[in-house]
Length: 168
Image 1 (cartoon, rainbow, N blue to C red):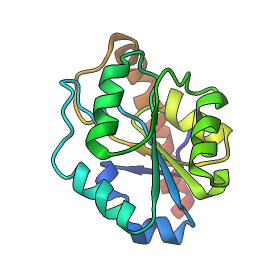
Image 2: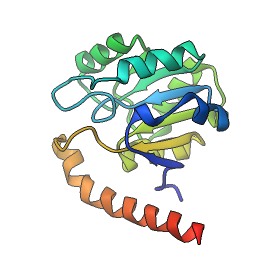
Image 3: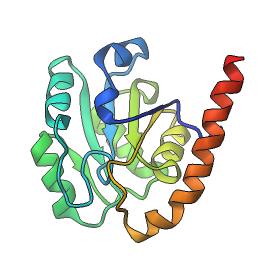
């Protein structure tokens, strides 16, 4: 289903090199808000080290954000030493395709990681990328995101039930 991620994790830090190799993933597209930056524009402990370690293992990265606040996206990109695109218009394909071209990888070898179903997951699934949904870093959200969260939480519960049903 286009609304469901391939996997739902606690944090980007739960994405390991072994997981990426098992799924033939060579590149990661990262969202910014509530994925690698909290509401107060801080990169939580461990994310820089996680990113650096995966880069040493040959994993390529690109930041893809819907934010119109270029300074915020650029700050996160500089901190993690990653290329970036802002104003991505996720879930539309345009931004994902720009990132894919920059990464020089096939869609099936790219994981797109974010905290929102209606932007990150749908966009990744539409582009045939490996969609990874992570829990938001914090409770604070932009107003437009805050409005969508209850519906996203409903979809997440249905997703979790589908996993349980598939295991039986």
